[in-house]
Length: 306
Image (cartoon, rainbow, N blue to C red; front, side, top):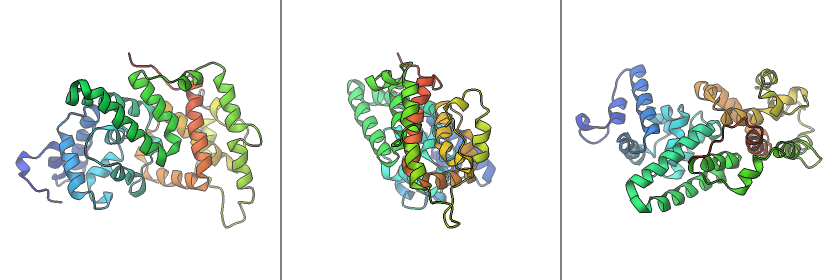
């Protein structure tokens, strides 16, 4: 696609897009995205905002830039959190049009993006930077959580760690007794999310609708992991096991910065969406509560900024 303006004077993103050879172009874009994800004042963001304005009406697969962003967890967190002209509605399209899920962006990437947003606001607005930061961060996290409620605890913990804004709820989750309570909330009792899942789909398996089993092998492998196994559902539910434990495992990976496989294999994201769609309420509850369980168990490296 041709971008209006003098190519010789174009920014690094526009120059990368103009490279003819695919591998070279993708490598240049990845390098640019990596630089922008580390610095919200980097001039490449001007290219990104201009391209979103000029070509944002086109399908996201049209432009290599958006496809490369979708393969970068730090890039996607930065794209959401940075203060700029890209609207939230445009960002939400990534999870709809590309092999990408917001739940695969790890805690460390969100924390980094929030820290960089604060620096950006302080640099641009001086004494008013704190007000702009809190307003923009609140709006972006609220918008994202309204569409993806599983992210509620993840984004709350990232904000608390990034700016030292530790709410009583976060302190409660860090108490030694919290893990037993949270385990019970998720897995125990007739009204627990697990029992609701099993009741709601007790008749599934009639040959028309089946429980997804794509990740049964991966969950079986996780049961042998030294730190992950204790956070999985301790009862083995046979062919149900993959669907039950996938959101648990994904939350653990997001807490421990181990989600790289989801950005490397687009087929896995397609299968992940099938699991999400089978019972969105279970996925949300299991992911969100497990993020709190990771904090309570000390699996999530939560160090508050000073």
